[in-house]
Image (cartoon, rainbow over all chains, first blue to last red):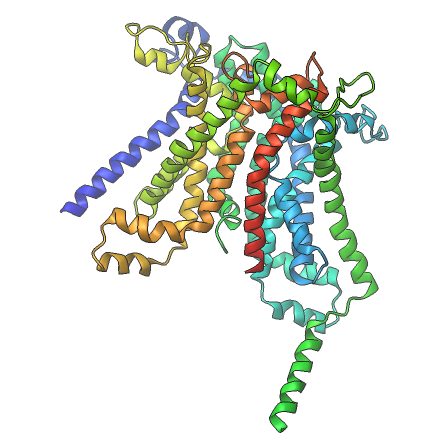
Length: 284
Length: 308
C-alpha cells in the first residue's frame, strides 16, 4: 500500500516537472496558431477564439525552404566527413601502434572543449584570405562559403566523435582484424569491411547527435557568413527576429518550423540520440 | 629444461604476432587518413588559438599594422573597461547556478527515473527536449515567457503585482537567462546520469539495503562514489557550458544591459564597429585560461582512461 502511494506521488511529481518543462515549447506552438489581432488584445496567455495556420504559410513563403536547403548543404557533407575521419582515426589509433597516438586523441578531445570565441577572430581573418575558385565559392574566398562552414564544423566536432569511437573500436575483438590481416587484407580493407560495419550503431548514434548540433549552431554562420541568402535556417531565424520583432506570432510559427526537424529526429531516433551522448560519457 | 624452451618458443610466437608488418600502401593510407583531420584541427582550431593569444598582446584593429603592446590590453581590461567585471561576475554566477541548481536537478531526475516506470519515455523526452532546440528558438521562447508586455509569467502574475521587466531590468534579467539555461542543462545532465546509473551494479544497492541503509544513505555512500566517471564528465561539461554561455544571451539582447558575458564581450569587440581585435583577443584569452584548467582535468582523465 505504501509502495503504491510513493509511486503515485512520484508520478504526480514527474508529470508536474514534465509539463513545466514542456510548457514554454507548448506556449510557442500555441502562439503560432493565434491571429495577431487576438493576441494583441488579450495577450498570449488567453483562451482562443479562432485558430489559424496563416503564420505557417507566411513563414514558409518567407523563403524558409531555401534556408532549410542551406542547412542541409552544410550539415550533410559535414556529418559524412566527421564520421569518416573520426572512425578512421579511431581505427588507426585503436588498432595500430601509432607514435603519439595518445597525444593525438587528447588533441582531438580538447579541441572540442575550447570556447569558439577564442578561435573566431584569427579564423575570420584567415578565411577572408584563402582564395577559392569561383565554382566553390562566389565570394572567391573561404569566407562566406559553404566549404568554410563545413570545414570548421568538421574540425570542431571530429574531436568528440574520435574520443567516443576510440573507446568503441577498443571493444571490437582483436581476433576479427587479425583474421583479416592473416588473409592478407590491407589496412583500408580492414577498415572498410571489418571495423566500419561493426561501428554502425555508434555511427548512427553520433550521426543523429551531430545532426542536431550542426543544425542548431548559429555562431559559426553568424561570424563566417555574410550573405543573407546563404545562411542556415537557425541563423536566418535569428535575423528574422531582428526584422519582425513585433510579430511574435509569425516568429512563433517560424520557430516551430525551425525546431521541427531536430525534435522529430530526437523523438524518432531517441535511442540512437541518447546512445551517442552516453557512449562517450560512461565507460563502455 | 624442456618446459623452459617451449615457454620461450611460445613467447617468440606471441611477439611475432604482435608486430604488424605494414605494407607501404598501408602506411600511406594510415598516414593520409590521420594527417587530414589532424591538419584540419591544427589549422582551424589550435593555430587560431595561438594566434589569438599572440594578438592579445598587440593593438591590432583589423586595418592598420599591429604593434606589440605587451600587457596593456590586459591592464585596460581590468581597470578601464566597465563591462569586464560584471561579465566575470555573470559568468561565475552562471557557473554557480548551473553547478548548484541545474546539475543536482538533473541528477535528481535521473535518480527518480532510474527504475521501471510507466511513462518513463515521456518524462525523459519532456525534460530532454530543450536540449535539442536551437538556441535561436530558446531565445525566442525566453521572450514569450519573460517579456514585460507579452510574457506568460507576467500574465500569470496578473495586473496586481505589476508587469516585471524580466528581460530589460538589468538587476534581474540575468536570472531569467539562468532559468532558461538551467531548463536546458538539467536535461543534458539527466541523460548522462541515467546512462551512468544503468551501469551501476544492482547488487551494490541490494547489499547496502540488506545492511540497513535507507535510500538516501544508499545513494550518497554507495551509488554516488561509483558514479565517478560520469561525475567527472558532468563537472567538466558544466564548467565549459558556463564559460561558453553565449547563444541564449546573444539571441535575447546581444548581451547588453545586465547580460554581459565574457564570450559576448569578445564578439562585441571583434565583430562590429569597434573592431578592437587585440583587445577582444585579450578577453578571449581570459576565457581560454578559465577553460584551460578544466580542459586539462578532462584530458588527464581521458589519458588515464586510455591507459586503463
